[in-house]
Image (cartoon, rainbow over all chains, first blue to last red; front, side, top):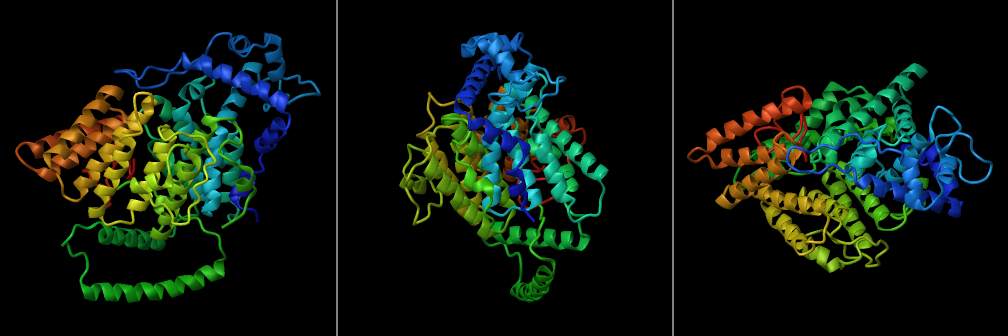
Amino acid sequence: MPSITEKLARTYTVRWLRLARSQPSGWNDRVRCFEALSVILTAHRASRSIGCWGQPHVSPARLLSEVARGARFSTEAVYQRWRAEQSDHGIKRWAGPDPVVKPREAFIAEARIVSFWPYRQGALVVADEFDMSLTEVAASYLRALAAWASDNPVLAACVPAGPPPSVAEDMMLLTQHGLRHRPGSRPDLVSGARRLETLACVMVAAVLDDASITPLGAFNVIREETLLLLSDPPDPAAVRVSSAVSELADLLLHSREGVQVLRAGQARQLAAELAGLSEVLARAVGKRGDEHDEQPGAKEDP
Amino acid sequence: MTTSAARSAQHPTDLVPGHAGSAAWIHGASEALQVLSGRGPADRMHAAEYATDLLIRCVEDVEPAQWRRAGLPVRADVSAEVQGGVRASDPAVLHLARTAMSLSSSNLRAVQRPSRWARLADFFDQIVGAQSAPSAHVLLRRLHAMVLCVRLQVGDAACDVIDGLLSVYELHSAMYGRNSYLTSLARTDVAAAYRQRARGADLSNAVRLCQEEVGARTRRYGRPPVHHGGVQSAGPLPAQPGRGGR
Protein backbone atom coordinates (compact mmCIF):
# COMPACT_ATOMS: atom_id res chain seq x y z
CA MET A 1 0.00 0.00 0.00
CA PRO A 2 1.44 3.44 -0.87
CA SER A 3 2.40 5.67 2.04
CA ILE A 4 0.43 8.83 2.71
CA THR A 5 3.27 10.99 1.34
CA GLU A 6 3.26 8.94 -1.86
CA LYS A 7 -0.48 9.49 -2.16
CA LEU A 8 -0.05 13.21 -1.56
CA ALA A 9 2.52 13.30 -4.37
CA ARG A 10 -0.07 12.10 -6.91
CA THR A 11 -3.01 14.43 -6.41
CA TYR A 12 -4.92 16.28 -9.11
CA THR A 13 -3.10 19.49 -8.15
CA VAL A 14 0.33 17.82 -8.40
CA ARG A 15 -0.54 16.61 -11.90
CA TRP A 16 -1.94 20.02 -12.86
CA LEU A 17 1.21 21.79 -11.66
CA ARG A 18 3.51 19.39 -13.51
CA LEU A 19 1.54 19.85 -16.70
CA ALA A 20 1.37 23.63 -16.30
CA ARG A 21 5.09 23.96 -15.65
CA SER A 22 5.89 21.81 -18.66
CA GLN A 23 4.73 24.79 -20.75
CA PRO A 24 7.33 27.40 -19.76
CA SER A 25 5.95 30.30 -21.75
CA GLY A 26 2.40 29.97 -20.46
CA TRP A 27 3.67 29.28 -16.95
CA ASN A 28 5.91 32.36 -16.89
CA ASP A 29 2.94 34.48 -17.96
CA ARG A 30 0.94 33.06 -15.07
CA VAL A 31 3.78 33.78 -12.63
CA ARG A 32 3.84 37.40 -13.88
CA CYS A 33 0.15 37.67 -13.03
CA PHE A 34 0.71 36.20 -9.53
CA GLU A 35 3.55 38.65 -8.96
CA ALA A 36 1.30 41.53 -10.02
CA LEU A 37 -1.31 40.30 -7.55
CA SER A 38 1.30 40.22 -4.82
CA VAL A 39 2.12 43.89 -5.44
CA ILE A 40 -1.58 44.83 -5.37
CA LEU A 41 -2.20 42.94 -2.13
CA THR A 42 0.77 44.46 -0.35
CA ALA A 43 -1.13 47.75 -0.25
CA HIS A 44 -3.89 45.99 1.68
CA ARG A 45 -1.67 44.51 4.35
CA ALA A 46 -2.98 45.45 7.78
CA SER A 47 -0.70 47.67 9.77
CA ARG A 48 0.36 45.83 12.89
CA SER A 49 0.15 48.80 15.19
CA ILE A 50 -1.64 49.16 18.48
CA GLY A 51 -5.25 48.08 18.33
CA CYS A 52 -4.92 46.55 14.87
CA TRP A 53 -3.39 43.13 15.04
CA GLY A 54 -5.57 41.08 12.72
CA GLN A 55 -5.78 40.93 8.93
CA PRO A 56 -9.30 41.87 7.77
CA HIS A 57 -10.73 40.32 4.61
CA VAL A 58 -9.88 42.26 1.47
CA SER A 59 -11.59 42.47 -1.89
CA PRO A 60 -9.68 44.77 -4.26
CA ALA A 61 -11.90 46.34 -6.89
CA ARG A 62 -11.45 45.37 -10.56
CA LEU A 63 -8.80 42.90 -9.49
CA LEU A 64 -8.12 41.17 -12.81
CA SER A 65 -7.91 44.49 -14.67
CA GLU A 66 -5.38 45.73 -12.11
CA VAL A 67 -3.43 42.48 -12.41
CA ALA A 68 -3.40 42.89 -16.20
CA ARG A 69 -2.06 46.41 -15.84
CA GLY A 70 0.61 45.33 -13.36
CA ALA A 71 1.70 42.37 -15.49
CA ARG A 72 1.52 44.43 -18.72
CA PHE A 73 -1.06 42.18 -20.36
CA SER A 74 -4.34 43.17 -21.92
CA THR A 75 -7.33 42.65 -19.62
CA GLU A 76 -8.75 40.17 -22.11
CA ALA A 77 -5.53 38.14 -22.03
CA VAL A 78 -5.82 37.77 -18.26
CA TYR A 79 -9.55 36.96 -18.29
CA GLN A 80 -9.00 34.42 -21.03
CA ARG A 81 -6.57 32.45 -18.86
CA TRP A 82 -9.03 32.05 -15.99
CA ARG A 83 -12.48 31.97 -17.55
CA ALA A 84 -14.47 28.73 -17.65
CA GLU A 85 -14.32 28.32 -21.43
CA GLN A 86 -10.70 27.38 -22.08
CA SER A 87 -8.98 27.13 -25.43
CA ASP A 88 -7.47 23.82 -26.50
CA HIS A 89 -3.99 25.33 -26.36
CA GLY A 90 -2.13 26.56 -23.32
CA ILE A 91 -2.50 25.84 -19.63
CA LYS A 92 -6.00 24.92 -18.48
CA ARG A 93 -7.15 26.65 -15.31
CA TRP A 94 -6.95 24.60 -12.09
CA ALA A 95 -10.62 25.20 -11.32
CA GLY A 96 -11.73 23.32 -14.44
CA PRO A 97 -14.58 24.24 -16.80
CA ASP A 98 -17.29 24.81 -14.15
CA PRO A 99 -18.92 28.14 -15.17
CA VAL A 100 -19.98 28.77 -11.56
CA VAL A 101 -16.31 29.49 -10.76
CA LYS A 102 -15.74 33.04 -11.98
CA PRO A 103 -12.37 34.09 -13.47
CA ARG A 104 -11.46 36.18 -10.42
CA GLU A 105 -12.10 33.26 -8.10
CA ALA A 106 -10.19 30.83 -10.33
CA PHE A 107 -7.25 33.23 -10.43
CA ILE A 108 -7.14 33.70 -6.64
CA ALA A 109 -7.38 29.92 -6.21
CA GLU A 110 -4.32 29.31 -8.39
CA ALA A 111 -2.36 32.14 -6.77
CA ARG A 112 -2.98 30.56 -3.38
CA ILE A 113 -2.02 27.09 -4.58
CA VAL A 114 1.21 28.31 -6.15
CA SER A 115 2.27 30.32 -3.10
CA PHE A 116 1.38 27.49 -0.69
CA TRP A 117 3.14 24.80 -2.74
CA PRO A 118 6.70 25.21 -1.45
CA TYR A 119 5.44 25.12 2.17
CA ARG A 120 3.55 21.91 1.40
CA GLN A 121 6.56 20.38 -0.34
CA GLY A 122 8.97 21.31 2.45
CA ALA A 123 6.69 19.67 5.01
CA LEU A 124 6.14 16.53 2.91
CA VAL A 125 9.83 16.03 2.14
CA VAL A 126 10.52 15.99 5.90
CA ALA A 127 7.49 13.75 6.53
CA ASP A 128 8.85 11.29 3.99
CA GLU A 129 12.42 11.47 5.25
CA PHE A 130 11.30 10.63 8.79
CA ASP A 131 8.68 8.07 7.80
CA MET A 132 6.01 10.00 9.67
CA SER A 133 2.78 8.45 10.88
CA LEU A 134 -0.52 9.78 9.57
CA THR A 135 -1.13 12.06 12.53
CA GLU A 136 2.40 13.42 12.28
CA VAL A 137 1.94 14.07 8.55
CA ALA A 138 -1.37 15.82 9.24
CA ALA A 139 0.22 17.98 11.95
CA SER A 140 3.15 18.84 9.65
CA TYR A 141 0.86 19.67 6.73
CA LEU A 142 -1.46 21.84 8.80
CA ARG A 143 1.39 23.65 10.52
CA ALA A 144 2.90 24.35 7.09
CA LEU A 145 -0.50 25.70 6.04
CA ALA A 146 -0.57 27.97 9.10
CA ALA A 147 2.97 29.12 8.22
CA TRP A 148 1.75 29.97 4.70
CA ALA A 149 -1.18 32.00 6.08
CA SER A 150 1.12 33.75 8.52
CA ASP A 151 3.58 34.69 5.75
CA ASN A 152 0.83 35.55 3.21
CA PRO A 153 -1.98 37.02 5.32
CA VAL A 154 -3.44 39.27 2.63
CA LEU A 155 -3.60 36.49 0.04
CA ALA A 156 -5.28 34.27 2.63
CA ALA A 157 -7.66 37.13 3.48
CA CYS A 158 -8.53 37.94 -0.14
CA VAL A 159 -12.23 37.20 -0.62
CA PRO A 160 -13.22 34.36 -0.62
CA ALA A 161 -10.82 34.17 2.34
CA GLY A 162 -9.31 30.88 3.40
CA PRO A 163 -6.73 28.24 2.55
CA PRO A 164 -5.79 27.22 -0.98
CA PRO A 165 -8.60 25.12 -2.49
CA SER A 166 -6.21 22.22 -3.12
CA VAL A 167 -6.27 21.63 0.65
CA ALA A 168 -9.66 19.93 0.19
CA GLU A 169 -8.28 17.02 -1.85
CA ASP A 170 -5.35 16.64 0.56
CA MET A 171 -7.76 16.48 3.50
CA MET A 172 -9.74 13.85 1.62
CA LEU A 173 -6.58 11.75 1.21
CA LEU A 174 -5.61 12.12 4.86
CA THR A 175 -9.09 11.06 5.95
CA GLN A 176 -9.11 8.15 3.51
CA HIS A 177 -5.76 6.97 4.84
CA GLY A 178 -7.03 7.29 8.42
CA LEU A 179 -10.08 5.15 7.67
CA ARG A 180 -8.19 2.46 5.75
CA HIS A 181 -8.24 -0.05 8.60
CA ARG A 182 -11.67 0.84 9.89
CA PRO A 183 -14.88 -0.57 8.53
CA GLY A 184 -16.64 2.54 7.33
CA SER A 185 -18.78 3.87 4.61
CA ARG A 186 -18.46 6.59 1.98
CA PRO A 187 -20.48 9.08 4.10
CA ASP A 188 -17.89 8.66 6.92
CA LEU A 189 -15.13 9.53 4.48
CA VAL A 190 -16.93 12.51 2.97
CA SER A 191 -18.05 13.97 6.30
CA GLY A 192 -14.61 13.35 7.86
CA ALA A 193 -12.83 15.04 4.98
CA ARG A 194 -15.25 17.97 5.07
CA ARG A 195 -14.72 18.37 8.79
CA LEU A 196 -10.96 18.30 8.36
CA GLU A 197 -11.20 20.94 5.63
CA THR A 198 -13.37 23.08 7.90
CA LEU A 199 -10.75 22.74 10.64
CA ALA A 200 -8.08 23.91 8.18
CA CYS A 201 -10.26 26.98 7.49
CA VAL A 202 -10.68 27.59 11.23
CA MET A 203 -6.92 27.45 11.66
CA VAL A 204 -6.28 29.93 8.83
CA ALA A 205 -8.95 32.23 10.33
CA ALA A 206 -7.08 32.04 13.66
CA VAL A 207 -3.92 33.24 11.90
CA LEU A 208 -5.80 36.13 10.28
CA ASP A 209 -7.39 37.10 13.59
CA ASP A 210 -4.08 37.43 15.45
CA ALA A 211 -0.96 38.65 13.68
CA SER A 212 1.19 37.32 16.50
CA ILE A 213 0.04 33.71 16.53
CA THR A 214 2.64 31.10 15.60
CA PRO A 215 1.88 28.12 13.32
CA LEU A 216 1.97 25.86 16.36
CA GLY A 217 -0.40 28.16 18.24
CA ALA A 218 -2.80 28.15 15.29
CA PHE A 219 -2.60 24.38 14.92
CA ASN A 220 -3.28 23.95 18.63
CA VAL A 221 -6.67 25.62 18.07
CA ILE A 222 -7.72 22.56 16.02
CA ARG A 223 -5.31 19.93 17.35
CA GLU A 224 -7.61 17.86 19.50
CA GLU A 225 -10.34 17.41 16.91
CA THR A 226 -7.88 16.85 14.06
CA LEU A 227 -6.08 14.07 15.88
CA LEU A 228 -9.37 12.57 16.99
CA LEU A 229 -10.51 12.42 13.37
CA LEU A 230 -7.31 10.71 12.17
CA SER A 231 -6.21 8.52 15.08
CA ASP A 232 -7.26 5.00 15.80
CA PRO A 233 -9.52 4.90 18.85
CA PRO A 234 -7.11 5.15 21.80
CA ASP A 235 -6.41 2.15 24.00
CA PRO A 236 -6.76 3.63 27.52
CA ALA A 237 -4.04 1.39 29.00
CA ALA A 238 -1.57 2.27 26.24
CA VAL A 239 -2.33 5.99 26.65
CA ARG A 240 -1.84 5.81 30.43
CA VAL A 241 1.47 3.94 30.15
CA SER A 242 2.71 6.29 27.43
CA SER A 243 1.87 9.36 29.55
CA ALA A 244 3.54 7.88 32.62
CA VAL A 245 6.71 6.97 30.68
CA SER A 246 6.90 10.46 29.12
CA GLU A 247 6.41 12.10 32.50
CA LEU A 248 9.10 9.98 34.12
CA ALA A 249 11.54 10.61 31.25
CA ASP A 250 10.91 14.35 31.52
CA LEU A 251 11.47 14.27 35.27
CA LEU A 252 14.74 12.40 34.86
CA LEU A 253 15.94 14.61 32.01
CA HIS A 254 14.87 17.98 33.30
CA SER A 255 15.14 17.77 37.07
CA ARG A 256 17.48 20.19 38.75
CA GLU A 257 20.86 19.09 40.01
CA GLY A 258 20.61 17.34 43.37
CA VAL A 259 16.91 16.47 43.09
CA GLN A 260 16.41 12.70 43.42
CA VAL A 261 13.59 11.50 41.17
CA LEU A 262 14.10 7.74 41.72
CA ARG A 263 15.89 5.62 44.29
CA ALA A 264 18.37 3.11 42.90
CA GLY A 265 16.14 0.18 43.81
CA GLN A 266 13.14 1.76 42.12
CA ALA A 267 15.20 2.42 39.00
CA ARG A 268 16.39 -1.22 38.87
CA GLN A 269 12.86 -2.54 39.28
CA LEU A 270 11.47 -0.23 36.60
CA ALA A 271 14.28 -1.12 34.20
CA ALA A 272 13.49 -4.82 34.62
CA GLU A 273 9.75 -4.25 34.11
CA LEU A 274 10.32 -2.10 31.04
CA ALA A 275 12.73 -4.67 29.54
CA GLY A 276 10.05 -7.34 29.96
CA LEU A 277 7.43 -5.06 28.45
CA SER A 278 9.76 -4.31 25.52
CA GLU A 279 9.93 -8.00 24.65
CA VAL A 280 6.15 -8.34 24.76
CA LEU A 281 5.73 -5.21 22.64
CA ALA A 282 8.30 -6.42 20.10
CA ARG A 283 6.20 -9.56 19.63
CA ALA A 284 3.04 -7.44 19.25
CA VAL A 285 4.72 -5.22 16.66
CA GLY A 286 5.86 -8.32 14.77
CA LYS A 287 2.29 -9.55 14.60
CA ARG A 288 0.74 -6.24 13.49
CA GLY A 289 3.23 -5.20 10.82
CA ASP A 290 4.79 -1.80 10.42
CA GLU A 291 1.76 0.52 10.52
CA HIS A 292 1.88 3.05 13.31
CA ASP A 293 -0.14 6.11 14.14
CA GLU A 294 1.37 7.63 17.22
CA GLN A 295 0.45 11.08 18.41
CA PRO A 296 2.76 13.84 17.25
CA GLY A 297 4.07 15.87 20.14
CA ALA A 298 3.72 19.57 20.56
CA LYS A 299 6.32 20.25 23.22
CA GLU A 300 8.83 21.83 20.92
CA ASP A 301 10.34 24.16 23.45
CA PRO A 302 11.12 23.65 27.08
CA MET B 1 12.46 5.16 5.52
CA THR B 2 10.42 5.32 2.38
CA THR B 3 11.49 6.57 -1.01
CA SER B 4 8.60 8.46 -2.40
CA ALA B 5 8.02 10.55 -5.43
CA ALA B 6 7.68 13.50 -3.07
CA ARG B 7 11.36 13.45 -2.16
CA SER B 8 12.80 13.06 -5.59
CA ALA B 9 10.56 15.62 -7.23
CA GLN B 10 11.16 18.51 -4.90
CA HIS B 11 13.77 21.14 -4.42
CA PRO B 12 13.55 24.34 -2.41
CA THR B 13 13.15 26.35 -5.59
CA ASP B 14 11.05 23.78 -7.37
CA LEU B 15 7.95 25.79 -8.08
CA VAL B 16 8.23 29.46 -7.35
CA PRO B 17 11.48 30.75 -8.77
CA GLY B 18 14.03 32.50 -6.63
CA HIS B 19 14.36 33.52 -3.04
CA ALA B 20 10.71 33.46 -1.96
CA GLY B 21 10.16 29.85 -2.94
CA SER B 22 13.24 28.74 -1.15
CA ALA B 23 12.36 30.54 2.06
CA ALA B 24 8.81 29.21 1.92
CA TRP B 25 10.08 25.65 1.45
CA ILE B 26 12.35 26.06 4.47
CA HIS B 27 9.48 27.37 6.58
CA GLY B 28 7.30 24.39 5.65
CA ALA B 29 10.13 21.96 6.38
CA SER B 30 10.82 23.69 9.67
CA GLU B 31 7.22 23.24 10.84
CA ALA B 32 7.36 19.52 9.99
CA LEU B 33 10.65 19.10 11.83
CA GLN B 34 9.13 20.64 14.94
CA VAL B 35 6.49 17.92 14.92
CA LEU B 36 9.32 15.45 15.52
CA SER B 37 9.89 16.94 18.97
CA GLY B 38 7.32 14.37 20.13
CA ARG B 39 9.66 11.49 19.18
CA GLY B 40 12.41 9.85 21.22
CA PRO B 41 15.91 11.30 21.80
CA ALA B 42 17.56 9.53 18.82
CA ASP B 43 14.96 10.79 16.33
CA ARG B 44 15.10 14.27 17.84
CA MET B 45 18.88 14.33 17.37
CA HIS B 46 18.54 13.05 13.81
CA ALA B 47 15.97 15.76 13.13
CA ALA B 48 18.23 18.44 14.65
CA GLU B 49 21.12 17.33 12.41
CA TYR B 50 18.81 17.23 9.39
CA ALA B 51 17.66 20.79 10.15
CA THR B 52 21.27 21.92 10.48
CA ASP B 53 22.15 20.21 7.17
CA LEU B 54 19.32 22.15 5.55
CA LEU B 55 20.70 25.40 6.97
CA ILE B 56 24.14 24.59 5.56
CA ARG B 57 22.72 23.69 2.15
CA CYS B 58 20.20 26.50 1.80
CA VAL B 59 21.84 29.52 3.45
CA GLU B 60 24.38 31.17 1.21
CA ASP B 61 26.20 33.50 3.59
CA VAL B 62 27.09 31.26 6.56
CA GLU B 63 29.84 28.63 6.78
CA PRO B 64 29.28 25.29 8.58
CA ALA B 65 31.84 26.29 11.21
CA GLN B 66 29.73 29.36 12.04
CA TRP B 67 26.64 27.21 12.58
CA ARG B 68 28.74 25.02 14.88
CA ARG B 69 29.89 28.06 16.85
CA ALA B 70 26.22 29.09 17.09
CA GLY B 71 25.62 25.87 19.02
CA LEU B 72 23.93 23.81 16.30
CA PRO B 73 24.77 20.12 15.74
CA VAL B 74 26.85 20.17 12.56
CA ARG B 75 27.79 16.62 11.51
CA ALA B 76 31.47 15.88 11.00
CA ASP B 77 30.96 14.62 7.44
CA VAL B 78 28.74 17.47 6.32
CA SER B 79 29.13 18.77 2.77
CA ALA B 80 29.65 22.50 2.58
CA GLU B 81 28.05 22.72 -0.86
CA VAL B 82 25.41 25.44 -0.87
CA GLN B 83 22.41 24.74 -3.10
CA GLY B 84 19.98 27.43 -2.00
CA GLY B 85 20.01 31.16 -2.18
CA VAL B 86 18.52 32.23 1.12
CA ARG B 87 20.31 34.71 3.32
CA ALA B 88 20.81 34.12 7.03
CA SER B 89 18.71 37.15 7.93
CA ASP B 90 15.62 35.65 6.28
CA PRO B 91 12.89 34.88 8.86
CA ALA B 92 12.63 31.31 7.51
CA VAL B 93 16.27 30.74 8.49
CA LEU B 94 15.59 31.93 12.03
CA HIS B 95 12.64 29.53 12.19
CA LEU B 96 14.78 26.61 11.06
CA ALA B 97 17.72 27.45 13.31
CA ARG B 98 15.38 27.76 16.29
CA THR B 99 13.89 24.38 15.38
CA ALA B 100 17.34 22.78 15.17
CA MET B 101 18.29 24.22 18.55
CA SER B 102 15.01 23.22 20.15
CA LEU B 103 15.39 19.62 18.95
CA SER B 104 19.05 19.26 19.88
CA SER B 105 18.81 20.99 23.25
CA SER B 106 15.86 18.81 24.26
CA ASN B 107 18.44 16.02 24.67
CA LEU B 108 20.58 18.11 27.01
CA ARG B 109 20.27 18.49 30.73
CA ALA B 110 18.44 21.66 31.71
CA VAL B 111 21.59 23.33 33.05
CA GLN B 112 23.33 22.95 29.69
CA ARG B 113 20.64 24.71 27.73
CA PRO B 114 20.96 28.42 28.55
CA SER B 115 24.47 28.73 27.12
CA ARG B 116 23.45 26.94 23.90
CA TRP B 117 20.44 29.18 23.33
CA ALA B 118 22.54 32.23 24.18
CA ARG B 119 25.08 31.26 21.49
CA LEU B 120 22.32 31.06 18.90
CA ALA B 121 20.82 34.40 19.97
CA ASP B 122 24.28 36.03 19.90
CA PHE B 123 24.87 34.65 16.41
CA PHE B 124 21.65 36.13 15.04
CA ASP B 125 22.35 39.43 16.83
CA GLN B 126 25.16 39.86 14.32
CA ILE B 127 22.98 38.78 11.37
CA VAL B 128 19.66 40.57 11.83
CA GLY B 129 20.04 44.26 11.12
CA ALA B 130 18.24 47.36 9.95
CA GLN B 131 17.71 45.87 6.48
CA SER B 132 16.06 42.69 7.80
CA ALA B 133 12.34 42.00 7.59
CA PRO B 134 10.30 43.10 10.65
CA SER B 135 9.39 39.48 11.36
CA ALA B 136 13.11 38.64 11.65
CA HIS B 137 13.36 41.16 14.49
CA VAL B 138 10.32 39.61 16.20
CA LEU B 139 11.91 36.15 15.90
CA LEU B 140 15.21 37.40 17.26
CA ARG B 141 13.42 38.95 20.22
CA ARG B 142 11.70 35.61 20.85
CA LEU B 143 15.08 33.90 20.68
CA HIS B 144 16.38 36.17 23.44
CA ALA B 145 13.21 35.51 25.44
CA MET B 146 13.92 31.80 25.04
CA VAL B 147 17.35 32.29 26.61
CA LEU B 148 15.67 33.90 29.61
CA CYS B 149 13.06 31.11 29.83
CA VAL B 150 15.65 28.34 29.89
CA ARG B 151 17.60 30.25 32.55
CA LEU B 152 14.39 30.45 34.56
CA GLN B 153 13.94 26.71 34.25
CA VAL B 154 17.20 26.06 36.02
CA GLY B 155 16.19 28.29 38.89
CA ASP B 156 17.83 31.49 37.68
CA ALA B 157 15.31 34.21 38.53
CA ALA B 158 17.87 37.01 38.57
CA CYS B 159 16.73 40.60 38.07
CA ASP B 160 17.92 40.69 34.46
CA VAL B 161 15.79 37.59 33.68
CA ILE B 162 12.66 39.13 35.15
CA ASP B 163 13.29 42.56 33.64
CA GLY B 164 13.99 40.99 30.26
CA LEU B 165 10.81 38.91 30.28
CA LEU B 166 8.83 41.91 31.47
CA SER B 167 10.11 44.06 28.61
CA VAL B 168 9.17 41.34 26.07
CA TYR B 169 5.69 41.21 27.61
CA GLU B 170 5.26 44.98 27.42
CA LEU B 171 6.56 45.11 23.87
CA HIS B 172 4.25 42.35 22.62
CA SER B 173 1.35 43.87 24.47
CA ALA B 174 1.98 47.22 22.78
CA MET B 175 2.56 45.69 19.34
CA TYR B 176 -0.21 43.12 19.17
CA GLY B 177 -2.65 43.89 21.99
CA ARG B 178 -3.14 42.51 25.49
CA ASN B 179 -5.03 39.42 24.37
CA SER B 180 -2.79 38.37 21.50
CA TYR B 181 -1.03 35.01 21.37
CA LEU B 182 2.54 36.25 21.86
CA THR B 183 1.44 38.55 24.66
CA SER B 184 -0.13 35.53 26.33
CA LEU B 185 3.08 33.54 26.12
CA ALA B 186 5.12 36.44 27.45
CA ARG B 187 2.65 37.10 30.29
CA THR B 188 2.86 33.44 31.33
CA ASP B 189 6.65 33.63 31.34
CA VAL B 190 6.64 36.74 33.54
CA ALA B 191 4.18 35.13 35.96
CA ALA B 192 6.42 32.05 36.18
CA ALA B 193 9.42 34.28 36.86
CA TYR B 194 7.63 36.16 39.65
CA ARG B 195 6.47 32.89 41.18
CA GLN B 196 10.00 31.53 41.11
CA ARG B 197 11.64 34.59 42.68
CA ALA B 198 8.82 35.01 45.23
CA ARG B 199 10.11 38.21 46.84
CA GLY B 200 8.10 41.26 47.95
CA ALA B 201 5.05 41.65 45.72
CA ASP B 202 6.17 38.91 43.31
CA LEU B 203 3.54 36.34 44.24
CA SER B 204 0.65 38.79 44.11
CA ASN B 205 1.96 40.02 40.74
CA ALA B 206 2.07 36.41 39.52
CA VAL B 207 -1.53 35.84 40.64
CA ARG B 208 -2.68 39.04 38.93
CA LEU B 209 -1.00 38.06 35.66
CA CYS B 210 -2.47 34.55 35.85
CA GLN B 211 -5.95 35.97 36.34
CA GLU B 212 -5.45 38.24 33.31
CA GLU B 213 -4.21 35.25 31.34
CA VAL B 214 -7.19 33.07 32.22
CA GLY B 215 -9.44 35.89 30.97
CA ALA B 216 -7.44 36.27 27.74
CA ARG B 217 -7.54 32.55 26.99
CA THR B 218 -11.21 32.24 27.82
CA ARG B 219 -11.87 35.04 25.32
CA ARG B 220 -9.63 33.41 22.70
CA TYR B 221 -10.68 29.79 23.02
CA GLY B 222 -14.18 30.19 24.40
CA ARG B 223 -13.37 28.25 27.57
CA PRO B 224 -10.97 28.53 30.50
CA PRO B 225 -7.61 26.77 30.12
CA VAL B 226 -7.17 23.21 31.38
CA HIS B 227 -3.89 22.55 33.20
CA HIS B 228 -2.52 19.10 32.43
CA GLY B 229 0.39 19.64 34.79
CA GLY B 230 3.25 18.38 32.62
CA VAL B 231 6.70 19.01 33.99
CA GLN B 232 7.70 20.88 30.87
CA SER B 233 5.20 23.67 31.32
CA ALA B 234 7.34 26.03 33.32
CA GLY B 235 4.62 28.59 33.81
CA PRO B 236 1.61 28.51 36.04
CA LEU B 237 -0.56 27.90 32.96
CA PRO B 238 0.05 25.81 29.86
CA ALA B 239 1.05 27.75 26.73
CA GLN B 240 -2.11 26.68 24.86
CA PRO B 241 -5.16 24.79 25.92
CA GLY B 242 -4.00 21.38 26.89
CA ARG B 243 -0.54 21.40 25.30
CA GLY B 244 2.85 22.97 25.83
CA GLY B 245 4.89 24.65 23.13
CA ARG B 246 5.04 27.98 21.37
